[in-house]
Image 1: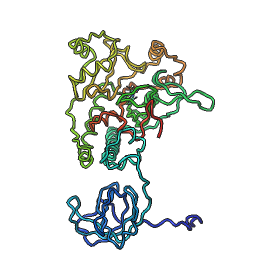
Image 2: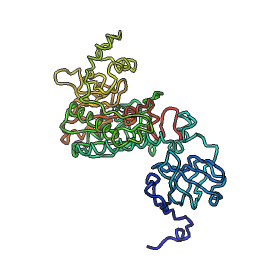
Image 3: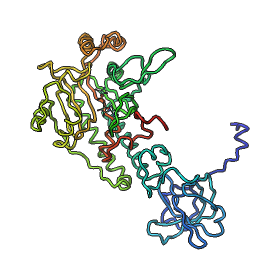
Image 4: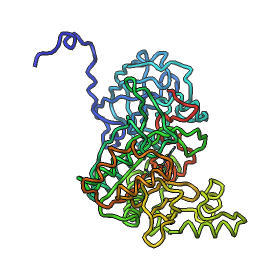
Length: 440
Ligand code: AMO
């Protein structure tokens, strides 16, 4: 194929990388290597300069002797370099071998002062780190969080796929609310009112008609003015919906999914756990199940006298969470507290076939069996002050052979905080959006 003229003239140097840093080992003494990385530290000792150089896979020591030191004159920490050199034995305790530089190219110089210290020797507060997130990613603790996040996503997809769930992508720009009117971001869509989706609820239910079992992992939006360590305006939701299942079936799926994510990352992410100083402990199953009414009893014992139908506030969940510090299901919520699409119990229409998965006081997931009679859905919409005519498109799919179905949604960032023992969801999402944060 003919090259474009601009490509022909390109002066871009051929990088010719031969190794990642993690590949360098003492069996390679004398071997020539070429690699790239960022200068994490640099020390001059007489005529020699000692560089520690990091790429995404690891850290190595590079020795620059007088004959090559001109190439790094005035170089700053965190600048990016290309190293050509030979592997040699080292006296340094932290390394298996080192590289004697034969040629160093400075590919981009880091401008100092840097807004944060990415090595983490100087602690930076979370706001400064989020303002310089790309640089923060060179901090090995931050990088480890996002490597674990990557493995969690891989484990979720693997397990759901094994359970015959098909991944779907539903619209995020929508014309009417999916979860009711509250907490919606609205925007102008070519002169019409549009919204950012709060959840894939209606679409995932519709897809059970043809695909039976579906899941989605995507960003959703909640216009909640919450300033807590567990609320984001844009969060990542893991959603499933399954035909011919009841809420107890999807609870089993949720439990085995959580356990498999813990198992997978406990094994795959040894280095990251070490860097973060944590140990991922696989939770024992089955998870405890307690009903809403049992919780009211427990609260009564703590002097909190709630009536059936009262919502559980954060303060209540903190009391319950102290008694049940790990994973547990909170089931059988009053219908009154549940969205219009949740189905009631056959033997008591005031109790729903629904659940939350809690981790102590933290709500990780909620779900349930869905109504699949469109007449009942219309009644429930009206009861909740919603206009059934806004749900016409959704409701018509119920006339096309809607199977009984159930599902749940779980916040990925909240799940990650439990896995890594972190208390702020902003640590586990790249560029958090909250009422005070829209940039960068
Ligand atoms: P719900 O509104 O309870 O249910 O949301 C499901 C889960 O999503 C997470 N979550 C959030 N995470 C961070 N910041 C937020 N602002 C936020 N809001 C929610 C929580 C929560 O448990 N359609 C139903 C699910 C279903 O029935 O399938 C729903 O969206 O972890």
